[in-house]
Length: 602
Image 1: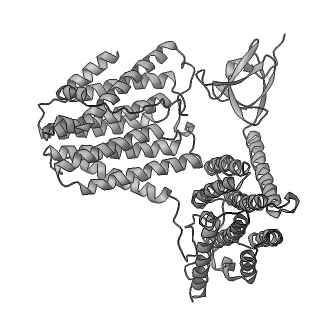
Image 2: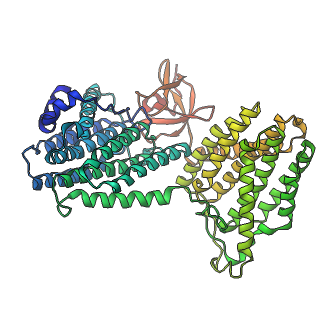
Image 3: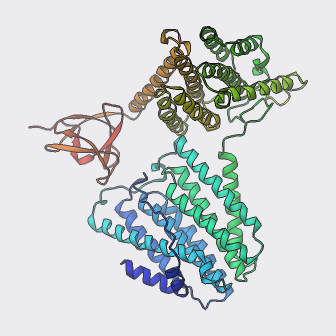
């Protein structure tokens, strides 16, 4: 099968470049299995559709090309590629193997147009980098089809139901950050297209395109938003290269189908980036973090940035230069912070000013704790952030002194809505990342070096959290709790490293207390979710035992087992595999025919 496919594709497209491919080092593109990366496995029907409908259609499309085509025929081929992608891709982006197929076939089809365009433009063989890249892609395509044919014949996926878009997992905070990192690199490469003036500028640009493509396919997070936007960026990457290749071949912009594709793709990606990137911090603004919470009305416009108690807190923080002084101040700061949040309206301007005030006081206390622990000024990130915060406070006070500062506020009070299911899932991911990254790092602090590493992790997390939080009530509450825990841990462990007695460390007591309440909220949410889904008691009917798996497939890893007659808590029995909740709170899957609501005899 593999040799047949390679011969067919190479004979059609790569014939003029085989010598070049033998001489050049093949670009090795990592095409990791999407299923292994965490996407849902494809059902038998989905595998069959990809293997016996999509793949043959691609081969039929590629068979229409020839090295003897004229530029008009090349432009028509480009149109067919774009139409084929539009028809096929949406139906593929729901399960693992078909996602991989979609990523591979998109490259093969579009890169074929690019290779032909550069050939017609008489580029030297060793400068047509798409040809080198395509050899690796075709090899991966062939391997993939062999694997899928074996899966179909094995019957392993016969019992799986077709996947739905909502089956794809949502991105965690860490996955969202990885996605934005790839998006930033993509933007940098795309901006270089503006510098292309001559044919000689094109090969270096193509090399950078291919480098980004390889990294994106290797590092793509296995979650819904990442799949959607990596795919959009990949298509724009492909279309940009094809646009330049056809232009070099002499296809006019009016006839070049990739002109419109690049324009539309660029607009969509730029719009997404503007909406998805964490909002920039705006100095001297009533919304310093660029909120998506509902705006304050005139009657909610109490913004205590110039409050006398706040000024006193800042003065005491800056003068707390001994362990005893900082311990005393810590208790006062915690009490002040609780009163601050009780008095604030739940609307954007008030919430963000309150967040800013709490954060500035926290930075000052953490800076003092790190200094007592022996941190040098250049390593004390809290001291650096506190200085910036004091400048911001002056800018905000100046703004509030100006007449008419409230003219832009709404006439009616906005309401902070309850979190919907999607926002709740997003919040759950944020919370999980917080427990792993922040709390995990904090509980490992034993020395000043550990404390400095934690401070860097904390600041990076804090800079992104406000823009990541969904605009709903539980997100605000839990986001505030996470921020308090993270900042108080910095001061608490600073005092601990400096030699403070654990019984007289107010920040440690506060951080651990809020952390416990945050965990209690998460556990309660899990219990409520179980009740809402109608958890049921089933009994294992397998003899002697049934395997419990990490996902709904026999190809998924075994995470445990349950003996015949053992009671299990089923939270979803709507499919062939039942989702169950384990005693430790985690979930697993059991084949539905191995469980029953009737206890087995014997």
